[in-house]
Image (cartoon, rainbow, N blue to C red; front, side):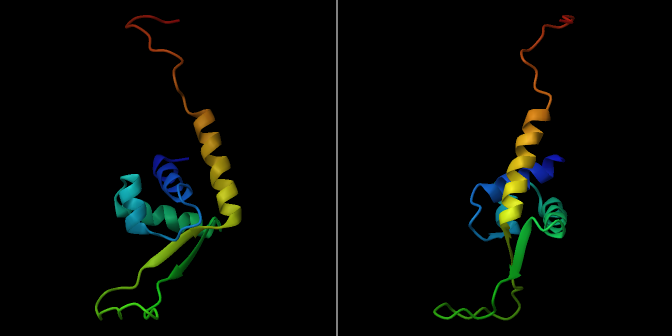
Amino acid sequence: MTQPVREVLAALIANPAADHHAIEISNESGLPLRSVYPVLARLEALQWLDSDWEPLDVPGQPKREQGWPRRRWYRLSAQGLAMARGALASARANSPVPSRWRAAGETA
């Protein structure tokens, strides 16, 4: 699993019931949008994410001005949440973390 996938999944899992916009995920993960969008597309293709476009007019809120693009919102699906938690746990278990730092030249 690549680091950008880990970062995006961690941002989504932090609040799994919420709708997330790519800019929010970018801010939370520290990744540029050019890294976030391909990860979101891949996760959506795997059906780990549900997505929808922001409505143009929401009752009780001011109308969106013309010229502003609608946002696409992403949310972990039930299956995606379980798969993401498992994938992150597996990635953490398999990441090479030294048990202690070694002095220069020390081999064991």
